[in-house]
Amino acid sequence: MLKDRFERQIDILRISITQECNLKCPYCHREGESDPKDTMSVDEITKITRASADLGIKKVKITGGEPLMRKEVTDIIRAISSIENIEEISMTTNGTMLKEQACELKKAGLARLNIGCDSLSSSILPKTVDRLKSSIIAAKNAGFDSIKLNMVVLNGVNDNSIKDMTEFSNEQGTTLQLIELIRTKDNSEFFQKYFYSLEDIEKELASKAESIETRPMHNRKRYNLDGATIELVRPHRSEFCANCRTLRITSDGKIRPCLMRNDNLLDILKNIRQGADNGELSRVILEGIQRREPYVKER
Image (tube, rainbow, N blue to C red):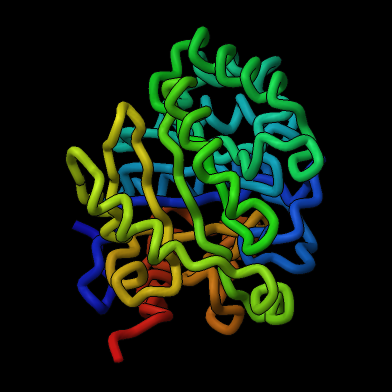
């Protein structure tokens, strides 16, 4: 079992495959990237994933930017799905290009989808509800049976849309994932204005839920009530960091031990381009894992 020095199990690799995106969501943290100078090739992504799998990584999350803007996205998924020990590949997407690509993604080996959807209002969300529905339908027709809608809740913007989103998610047979705005080094003013705590929502869900499950990832709670399934992502709690199981790889090939830090990155792409073999890459990955530490600690 792969662990960091804080005894946290590491079994998920989160790979950004592009920084391109066709939307401009104001809260986007760009996976912590501010000015990427390069982009990994399909072969380089595959080499990093293979070395990670040899160490014990079991799951891969594909992110961006918007990953569906990468023309080789299905090639990347197909290559990763062929790696021994990789049990599941998932993707986070804004869904605007999903309808056209859902079948090919499924055939290539993608198992799960997280679709960003912050509101059903076209004045907030730069795509229509009909477009979102057609994307979900296309995904289901392609064989995806695990679909989540990601809703970043913003104070005074869409916090009054949670009920509508819950009903919509329930109607569509998806899981609604409510996400608190993440504080980064660059968004202090935005965070102060728009952060919306999900504490009261969580208390209400806990009191009304017919059943509650706890996921190992971040120790997240999954609430089931009235046919709906709701998860909460609250990244500013010590419990969240204490149960982090993810190692991040930026689109320009850097190991990022923590989304919230910029001072402990490790350039693995440089090693690949200098001819490093699988064993050498594994050693770099292990060094990256040893640089991990909880960002929010118990006080």
